[in-house]
Length: 174
View 1 (cartoon, rainbow, N blue to C red):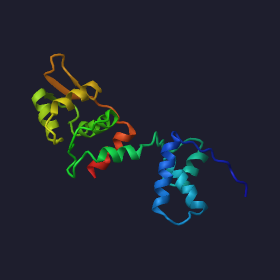
View 2 (cartoon, rainbow, N blue to C red):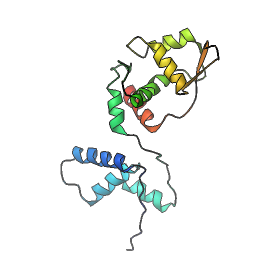
View 3 (cartoon, helix red, strand yellow):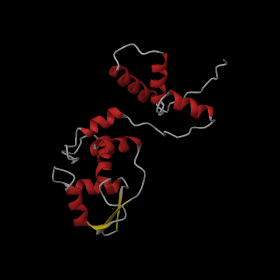
View 4 (cartoon, helix red, strand yellow):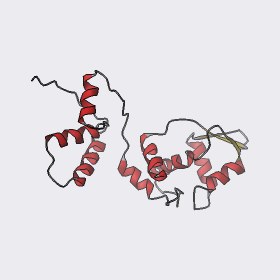
């Protein structure tokens, strides 16, 4: 039987390496040929090798996995949340602050217009360190929420969170 070459592409080799490392740690036995192909396919965002092969043979990806989340960064950010999904403290690293903001952003109702007080009350319900203003201001600076020029009314800006943020939102909700 003739073997058909299947092109393989990953957006970030470091994310692939971490993904492979995690999978190999879960299976201490030496993986076989098919197990390795499944690991590589999952590292590229497919369910398994069969899904990767079907997608490649179709000439286009059946499901575009998009960029993969950096699960190490997600795990670092998840430590800042308690079991109820509330932010315990404000991260010192800016990139983790931004990632943590997405979890609070996901709690803001779509399309709801809120006064500054209502926005602060909602944000206060999702953090434990008593500074809703810093979260509200940072969300505004990051263009996650909009506000009127005088700062009276706030509204969530609808957008797709980045892959790391989607993974963190799901992890905190779980």
